Image 1 (tube, rainbow, N blue to C red):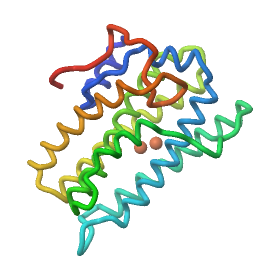
Image 2 (image 1 turned 180 degrees about the vertical axis):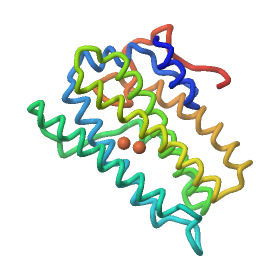
Image 3 (image 1 turned 45 degrees about the vertical axis):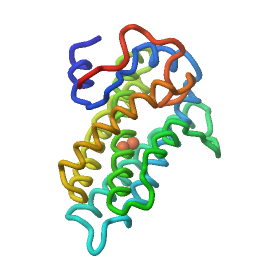
Image 4 (image 1 turned 135 degrees about the vertical axis):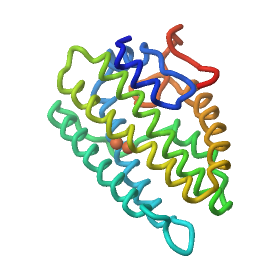
Length: 222
Ligand SMILES: [Fe+2]
Ligand SMILES: [Fe+2]
């Protein structure tokens, strides 16, 4: 693995590292299907930021809340435009329906009806998805040596998503005490590691490879 990539991935808090074989497998498969899944994720990330926009704790939003959510939503719509342009340039078309079992599994962790605790959980799920996507973009950019257009896309998205995961954690710290956020964040990172490793293989941004490589996998204390 390239030295720069190692440094990039080490800057993420994730507790299960995706094996390089994941990127090799999805790039060897249906790239249009991978881009289609990716486009839907960008759309959902934009909707999620807009949904969170009005979920601030009463009576007034924490400082930066509205700005942060609108910034993320705008970025995600830009990503969506980039990905859908690439799909149509390659002769594909965005599908109407999309399944995202990884995000659905993560959503089970949200403690509904718990006020600011629910809000903190929602912000953390968003942060986890951003961080995992970020890791996947870095791997794809590294492995995709035969397609300059795709490589450039993944490279550019890495930086943007890296900023996003921090935004959500920073907002969580404005809603609930930092000690509570830190404790819950550790639990969430452990849960995410279990969830990502049980995903099915396939041409999706949040799938898991067919058989685990010795290179990837759970890291005890990161
Ligand atoms: Fe995005
Ligand atoms: Fe994002």
